[in-house]
Structure formats: structure tokens, C-alpha cells
Length: 372
Image (spheres, rainbow, N blue to C red):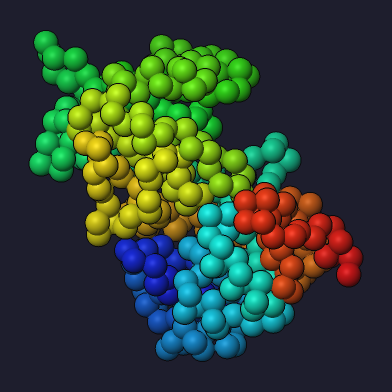
């Protein structure tokens, strides 16, 4: 198979879809790997590293898209990239279709087959290709939130860990999954007073067993959230419904109950965000203010630490990438129901229920598609 990896073009996105190690593995199995020139520079991988791995460097994204059987990326294809997709081509990347009707319709119109990293599952019910970036984003959230809390950036001017005689920042993490757990660990490590909210009692028991008094946890209800955000200096939104739009858990009306200069960090922004006032921002212009509350809603947070993120993501995606290349997408999905769960689009048909529900589009079962 011809595997193509274009340079990411989303603003301030420095990750790359394939590492030189992944390219070497694919080439060793007899596949041809095409890398757009300088695609890995933002992650610290130069063209020589890819050529040493056996990949071929090509000058333009257009050549990658025109030549490759499978396109491997990090972020969802941008409008100019979607125009280059074609019928029968395989796209393997993050998609986050539920809050993005334009992308969804373009992918359907292209006739391509699109497998989304964020909906591939595992035997434990987890999301193995989302987990590494969730870990990175979770660990980044208190870091960027603490920066936003600084007075010069519009925040309350509160130090996360306080100092002797002055209390620490109060941090509320909504969601106790991968993002929330890592966010809570880092925020607590910075000395903050942290409370995690979650609706799963088994998850809350797990957090209590593993972390003890490192941070507090509480069952999540609308009332509990409303009460806690009134005293919070920082609220981190870490709620995920796989493949679906994130629920809105803090309304605009509630902002008036919060402390002026408090910070909302929305890690769920890729899925539309879990605060009513959230809108996607970039690393170049990451924060904005609504009703006196600072919002940090960068849609590709892990791109800020591109090398760590690229290697972590590559470790997770490589086995699936190689399976798709070795067997073709249909056989690979027949052999692995967890990979089949990643199928979102095929030949003009939507194949992921949560996206169809969010966008009002009819859905065809992926099991029907692979048997056709």
C-alpha cells in the first residue's frame, strides 16, 4: 500500500501523523511511505530521518493526496485538504465530526473511507487512540489554566499552590476519566485544592482508592456543579461522550455566579465544548473573556508539546496503521471489531450513530458496510 503523510496545516499544529519509526515499520512490511517535505519538523523529525527509515519525501501535499492509498494525519482534514480526497481513498486521523457538519458533508461527498482515531475502542471499553492525547491535554490543562489565571492575562491573579499564609487556588475538574484524572494529578501536584466531579460511582471509588487525599471527588449533579463553580478559581471541562457532541455543563447565566477573573479550560472543545460560552481558539490567540470569566479553548492543546504528543500518538496508532496497510481497511475491520468502531464514513455513507444523531444524518451500520 502507498501510505501518505502530509504536513499538518491547522494553525499552530506542529504534530505529524507518522514518526520515522512508524515509517520504518511500514517500509519493512513492503509498503511505500510518502512524507510531505518538512512534515515532521515541528516535532523534531527532519527529512533525513524519514529517508533513513526508507520513506520518500515529496514536495507538496497535493502529490501526497494524489498518490497515496491511505492518508495518515493528526488533525481533521481542513477544507483545502478535503477537496483532495477521492473515492476509495482511506483517511486515518482524528475527525471529531459531531460538531463539524461542514467536514462531515465534505467527507461524504468525497467518497473516501474515513476511520477516526477518537472512536476506535479496545477490549476494556477504552479509547486507545484518544487516550495518549487525553493524557497530554489533561496534564496541560492546569498548566495553561494557571497561566491564564495570572493577572496580566486577565485572570484573578491567584497562584495555584498559594504561599504560607495564603490559600491555594480552588480547581474543579468536571469528568474523572483520562483527561480529568491527569488534570487533577497535575493541579494537585501544583498545590491546588482540587475537586473532581464524575457520574460513575465505580470511577469515583477508583479515584479514591488510588489517589486517596491527593484530591477530593464528588458525585456530579447540576446542583453540585453550580455550587462548586461559585468558589472555583479554575474549572477544567474534561467530559467525553465518544464520538458525540459534548454536553453543556456550565451555562452562560452561571458565569455571573463565578468569581471575576476565574478561568474555564475546555478540553472537550474538539467535540464542541462542555461550557455554553466555549468557542474554539488557537495557540496564537488562546484566551478570551465572557462576562468577566476567562476562557481557554484551544482545539489542539497537545500540539503545544508536539514532540511528546507525536511520539505518544505514534506508539498508539502504529499497530492499527500497519493492520490497515497489511490487510486493507475492510479485512482489517472484519478481523478487529475495535478498529471497525473507528469507521465513521464510507463511500458517501455515514457509519457512526452518535455523529448521525448530532447532525441529523441517516446512518448505515458499519457491519453492513464491511459485508457489502
